[in-house]
Structures are given as C-alpha cells and as structure tokens.
Image (tube, rainbow, N blue to C red; front, side, top):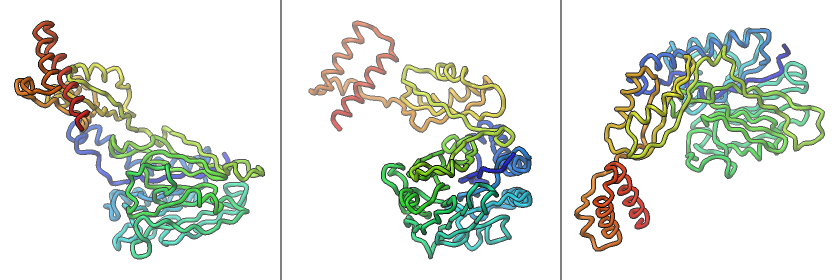
Length: 401
C-alpha cells in the first residue's frame, strides 16, 4: 500500500495512573487499562511496520508523557518503539507539551538522544521537509515550536511565519486556540502553553494545523485549512476517556483551483490491532424515588460482552439515601457487572423541619400546610410525597435567589 497519510497523535499522558476508585473497586480493570496504555506504542510500531499500513509520517503534538521525568519503565518502551518506526523509514516529529515541558532541566527529552525529530526551539520554524512523492504529491513542510519558560509567556499568542505556496504546510503546536467561540471560556488563558489563532494560521498558508492539549477530538474547517485536536486514543479515566480512535491526515485534490477548499482530509480510524481497549461512559439521572436496585436494572442491559470495553456510569440527581451510590456499586459487584459508578452530582435530600415551615406566614408556609392536608387525605406513597416536597422547596429557593 502507498504510504500517503500522516498520523497525528497528542496527549497520550503515558505514566498517568488509572483512577484510585477503579484500582480499589475493580483492580483487574485498572490493570487492563494500564496494560493497554503501556502497550500502545509497541502495537503501533508493529502496525506501522506492516506493508498495508498507509502511514508515512508520525506527528506527536505534546504531552506524550504525563510527567516531565517519567520512570524508565514508562519511557523505554516508547523510545524503543520510536526507534523501530524511524528505522522503518517513517519520520517522527515530537513536540513537548505542558506536562512534559522542555523547560525542565531534567525533562526526559534532555536526558537522552530522542528518536526522530524533537522540537526544542521556542519560535515557529520549519522542522521537516519531505520532497514531492515521498508522502504527498507536493512537497510537505512541518513547522513547529515548543513552549519554553523564559522565552515564551504563559498564554502567549504564537507568531506564525508565512508558509510557502508551493507545498503542503503543517503547523504542529501544543496549546489552545484563541479564535472566539471555538473553545469554552473555562479554559485558562495563562496555561503554560501557546495560544493559536486558527484564522491567522489559515491566512499564513498552513493547510493542516496539528494541535495538542485538548483531550477531546475536535475538528474545524477554515478557508483552505483544517485544524484538529485528535484527543488521546485511550485516556486514563472516565473523566478523560480519550477519543477511541487514531487520526490520519491525507492530501486533498492538489489540482483544485479553489483556495477556500481545505487541502487536507481527516480520517479517524480505530484499528483493533492497536486499540484493543477503550472507555465507554454512560450517563444516568436518578430521583429520590429510585432505589439502588432500580439503577442497576437500568445499567444491566447496557453492559456489553467482551473485554475490550471498560465501562463507567456517571450518575446525577437527588437521592433519598446517603449510601445510594455505594449500595448500587456493591450490587454491581455482587452481580459481577464491572461498571464503575461516579456520582459527584448526586445530592441527598436534606432534612427539613416541616413543623417550622408550616408555621411560616409566607407562600412557602401556605404551600407546606396544603401539602400536609394532601398527605392526610390522599395517603400517597411516602417517597413520592417527599419528592413533591423537595421539588417544591427547590422551586421556592430558586425563585427567591
């Protein structure tokens, strides 16, 4: 097969531990997750060595490691795999991120000869040039820089040189996009990484903007360009699950006269020979009427067969029991259903002094008195009555706020 695609990776955070809750609740799942993440580069190298693999270039857009100085058992498999890939004639370009930042004196990238092309400089410049026909029909140029304290300021908007018109130009950076409306304002602008204007990158002639730092797959199409955060193929936790895929990038029709047409094609794939494990995160809403058995009954039919999926359920809502999540988790364990429950947004119903509320000379006091009369006349299910009371109290407090 012709090698006419580049592989865009970012934010693998190798060395990050599985969540403590998973290690304590399902240690065998935590071990499976850790093994799958540790095996990623070895399996990737084997795939890249096969004749049918279309990849002829690998880009790593930062945060390959979770720590700037990871232990040898984390780094050595990666270095060995990268050396194999380079020996196969496939170039690899690695730019450090904010977790494995090059500014640290003991960063792993300073401790040894790094396979492939490492980007240590703080200003954007050309780091790789492939002649026409080696990967794409046109010459391919990679431009990159790495954030370095003392040379770059946190949240600095990166300056972009103009890219040549006769080539396919890739911008490889670790940072957040600065264009309004593309990312949530919750992102901190002063993080130790670059800010990137995608509109400016497109104007400066970059056809593919290979980004790292955001852990979800995101893709934007601009005039003549495409920008992508690939997300990690397999993340360390249900709150950071990864994308479950690899991102391949190819060359669009080089003969198209339209400058507004993107010059890059993006193809997410999920080869099982590499990605043999992934997170699946379910979401459930509960009410005070629900019992732990009710939640387990809703989860049970959604547990897939096979070992390739690590399943987690995020639970939100109100519960009449302080131990609702713990009780539901124990039921899942008893039924041998390996589902990790997370419930940061499960709120117990607080106790209230009904007598005190009923004596209030207010709209709330009048409502509580009518609620008491309704209970005496209709004799409703106690849990249902408590739910009605809680929703009313919540509504009154919301209106007062």
